[in-house]
Amino acid sequence: MSPFLSSDKQSALQHVKDYKPHIEGRQLRILLHGPSGAGKSSFINSLQSVLQGRMSTLALAANISHDSFTKEYTTYKIEKENPNTFYPFVFSDTMGLSEYKGVLVDDVKLALNGHVKDDYRFNPEHKLSEGDQYYNTEVNPNDKVHVLVCVIPANTAGQIKGEVIRRVLEIRDVARELGIPQIAVITKIDQACPEIREDLKNVYRSVYLKEKMEQFSVDVGIPMNCIFPVKNYSEEITFNDDIDSLILSMLSLIIDFGEEYMNHKFSQPEVPVTKALTDLELVPGCYTVAAHCS
Image (cartoon, rainbow, N blue to C red; front, top):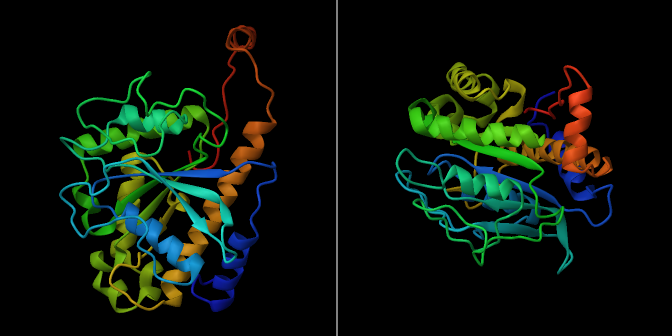
């Protein structure tokens, strides 16, 4: 089914609006990471714009790619139509990854486990330490990450190599150990391919974009069916159904993956570490099963 049919857009929008975690009091936390200049902040603004029906610039963004514009760990809530009511999911934004500076992998690991407080200013030289005022020692389930999203720019995807890929892989390994579902979002697709820039409906017909997605899948191991192309609202001042459809279909899947993970995670009884290790020793070949797209 084409992702650009208006009925699909309305169905996805309704799915997002109707979403309510099965476990009362839970909040779905989605963590964004990726190279500097990938469009993480613009992605958050685009999501908020589509859901609120008006252009948003809540997350500060810039049209530069050589350095990360985001410096602090920030969590964004999206307000619903009724004032002072919010969607039961939040997006946490991080400083971009880069070859020589940028967010430290150790800080992203801490964020995955809920140890990073909002407004923590990332330091490329030193990781957040226990005892710091921004280190969260009393972690509750809503502080932890339930979906990890790697944001990659299509126009420079082929240039993301070496240290950045190594850091992405290291972050993926930690998320996998925690069972956190992972997806990738490919942004700036219109800048990467003139065919798409001319008509966004060509996104799934573009051989060039498919090759970029396949190469990234090989580089970091994220399956192709967990890599989603989107176009952020960056220069537009009016809404576009094609842009909305890509964003909403991707957000619907993020919600589904996160909800399944939360239901599984919080339905399991807490087992003391010593007992868990003993049990594993008694079960030859025991292994854990990874969640979606891990």
